[in-house]
Length: 330
Image (cartoon, rainbow, N blue to C red; front, side):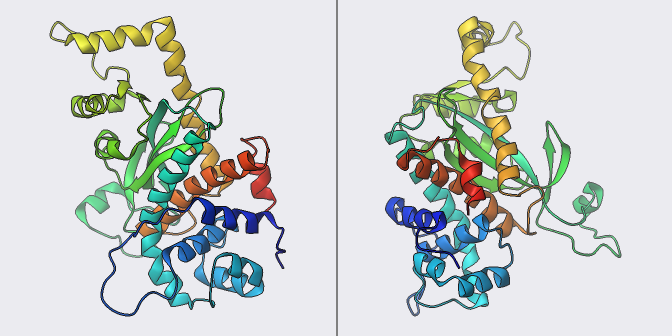
């Protein structure tokens, strides 16, 4: 049984400390919810941290550990249907709470408030794959069972084509501090630059520079970022020609200069290894469950948990990056 001084109990208490109310879904008519969105969110954080991927396993764990159930704020154990039904609200809630924690860590001086990197990463879904030709035609081959029909084909620089989901993530990049997740969402094979453009308003107001790869060399995104006083540093997707505008020439020249190279190098040492760390630490390669809502829930909760563990380390004078050792204690 989990004791009251267990790190998991302290982490759940920390969620109470940093929580900002965000109604993930508009309230409809009917009786008020017995379990608040914060309570359900904490339950699924426990599910992630303890790798209790099935609702039955989570229910049994809570029944055997009343201290954890109490720390989640449960007036009584929810039935398994409630756990399944309330899953829908976890992903949008996680997006909002990630932003809250990211800004909290910036204000505490834990990470660089000015520079960030954004990128997308493919997370493979478990089970058989739906070959692209068949998926595009809407044909499920006879005998192919256990197929995740929500998943999509995503092209990965490092892993080729992956059948699954894409996480779009923005993290801090200062070389002297720990990485902090500032914003995140999960899609199918959505265009990375379009997703980022739609989420510029969600980035911290302190941000002035985004380090991106050539896939983000999009005039609409760069213009929208400039309107928010954010400078985009991304290699040009096309070679410089006679008709290349001066602002693109200036960006290309800066990126090959010594200070430009040094600054852009922060991207490669931050966001690309970070995705591998998240998949490894939280056992998300492949994902534990099929379906868009499960993929979004567990990916976003892992990114939220990363920030939460960093904040726990900060408040307890532990090394900021000692996330794995803390996870191992849970």
